[in-house]
Image (cartoon, rainbow, N blue to C red):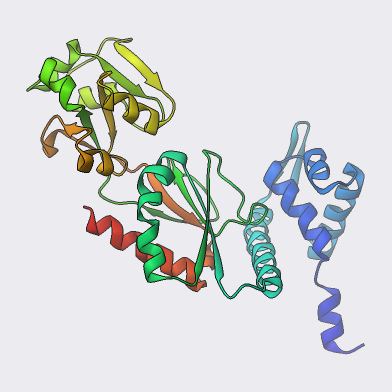
Length: 303
């Protein structure tokens, strides 16, 4: 047996890596077995074989499931990248289209209100890239869900990925012109007696905004509350109340005149709520680089 054959014998089988990756991601052998359409004993066997090959324990076994050891954590990040790259290579090899497919996942409001109106600009710059956009508040798995880049909303505490936070984001108070006409305000304190719309999906809400102005707020002052920013903004266009929302999501409403800013910029609250998330190896993929550069330019352009 020559050296190359020996080296290949030391490479785990794909099914072994999949068993490890799914178990690490789900923290449970039985759940991993269900996803892979295997028995739990078959998954356990693959993991045991992998640990024997590596010569180290990858999991700490407990009554409620498994957690990764420090060695397991490092190995998990490498394996996730390898499986994703293998999936991409297979997909590209089988793709008969001349276009390069870019798979983007986004939080719903950002996808609808910021990204979608600007996709024409991206297509003009990169006509040979086919854009596939899906939206939800789930943090999808890059390999399993075939995602190149994920635009997430929330606190950036995700591990094993690159995170670029969208800059210059802030929360602003907006209202429809007809609401301001019948219920004008000139100071933040006056809002305490006005009809307020609560966006439950924002990282900071009315109590934080009022605290930023040195004011406290009653516990339940809201006329309406919604779990999606686009619903809160639409409600505001109908004059149903004052809304507190991210400036990233409101440009089209301001440009159309459906909503107006109530206060000057110095009364807005800076936040870091939207993030571009992707595996580290994706920085070397040209289509991902194109998208990251484009979105950075668009943010600066609209700042």
